[in-house]
Length: 380
Image (cartoon, rainbow, N blue to C red; front, side):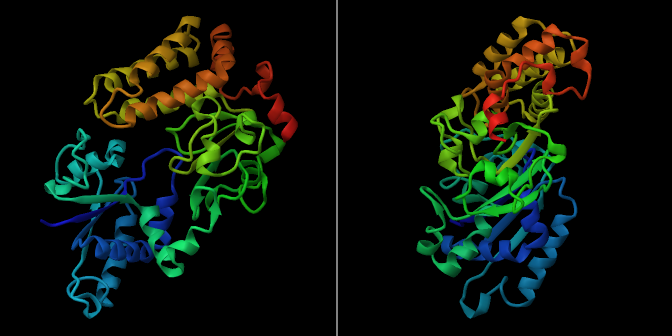
């Protein structure tokens, strides 16, 4: 039975663009990682499933694949080893849901990108019911430096269980947006304010909040972003960002680090994300299909001056009924941002309800609220 390796390049998480950088500027790094991983798996056919909106990148990958083949690193009998490998680039259909591995496999087979019920998992029955390994671009590109210096040496980079390096897509209200490779020994505060990384917040504005791991992870207010619940400096590690669970922490997630300054509206930001998840739901699961629509509509009412105080509790109840009740994680991804926004910024939701006319102004800042960030203000 054939085995397959699939590279998940369907990078559609809002705030995340690290894989795009690797494919656009370091395509041979990815190809080398695919070659090594395919050899280890005994896979002779490997697929790169790329986000449909990345219209220009498949041409870059195809050119790099052709160059590798011309130099004897792909095709038949690679470098005289007897190992054969072909890499194929498949353009996605422009659906966020296809970033979920089983929906990606369905789409790769030419079907509608609906997630499958698991088990069986792709490693047992994946592409065309054959054993399949699905990994993302960053993971496969990391194979090369690991092989070059050895796993033991690579594991010495970082701290605790957060070993190796991590690519962070930094954007939002920062002076130096971009993709940064970090060794996870730095604090969140250093990452935001150091000239080596994000360079701080423009125009001297204060930090209000951050979504540290892409749109699907919980937002954190500045005081919890810079300090853990124990009062320690929060580090750019998997463990530290999740310290205290979702009550006081978040997740590294996809590494999409979105910074919000004091002039940004959390309600509007949450509404924007709710619109996205409602649009991208495949509709297969009732809690997600119906719940994302209800959250979008309730948030629209609050944002545009038609909300009621009871709507805030209604939102909380809706997200609670979505989380954990769907086939794939899209339901959780839609629920967590809403839950975190209410948990940490309920006063802002209430302000919108109490000030329906003023709430429609697009550029109002923290001055409209009782200051919810005394710790962050003191820290920065």
